Image: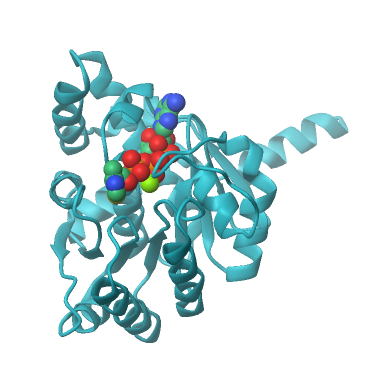
Length: 280
Ligand SMILES: Nc1ncnc2c1ncn2[C@@H]1O[C@H](COP(=O)(O)OP(=O)(O)OP(=O)(O)O)[C@@H](O)[C@H]1O
Ligand SMILES: Cc1ncsc1CCO
Ligand SMILES: [Mg+2]
């Protein structure tokens, strides 16, 4: 065998089979039904709970200071989403993230509109002290959280995910978190390795809370994944994006698309995942 052929064989042998692993991750969520605790925003709470149920996880939205830490310690994973802020929610976010870190509960930060609004930008930076397992945001949010000028229009991005890859890698190295930048192509990095997830549909930009729901799916996958956190984050985004592609085929517009996405996640089969997941 010549050198090039040997290398190709080695690469094939060493490369994880992302499609099979993505299916195994979905099966693990369905089998174990992890409890996913969310401190999230007022817009997306119901959608996020229904996405998690369709996936096979068990959602609980608890955001009062008296209970947030207790649940975070007991849960399989935690989401902290900055979409709706108040002094009381900030306190509950800190209590939940602190408890998760102490208990070893994987937790995911969704830095909604960070960069666009200064109060929550400060809160997001403080929350990093509780060592998030993953951070998922759009390109403007991730660039801003990494310390740059990310722009942003309220909760929407004004940048492309590919344009902020260096910032994402830096944020991952600085925090120890897996960083996922979503957009047409999702980029997932641990600061060293980077995966690109090519699943998704443009209709996702016409329904609120698609990013927030993607964050919750990441949390559910991290609850069952063990140490392979970079891959689990990419699988979550691929499963969610592929479900969106399937839903878009039968949709008449954003409303039927949203309903179809929940149905599509619920019904995903092994054959569909093996044919549809696109990660490189
Ligand atoms: N142009 C696009 N084509 C395909 N998929 C997309 C596109 N834009 C976003 N997505 C997908 O939509 C989901 C949400 O990503 P997005 O970056 O829009 O999040 P977000 O801005 O945080 O959303 P929100 O704040 O409304 O929850 C991801 O799964 C992503 O892959
Ligand atoms: C529209 C909106 N406003 C605050 S949070 C949210 C949901 C999408 O991030
Ligand atoms: Mg968002």
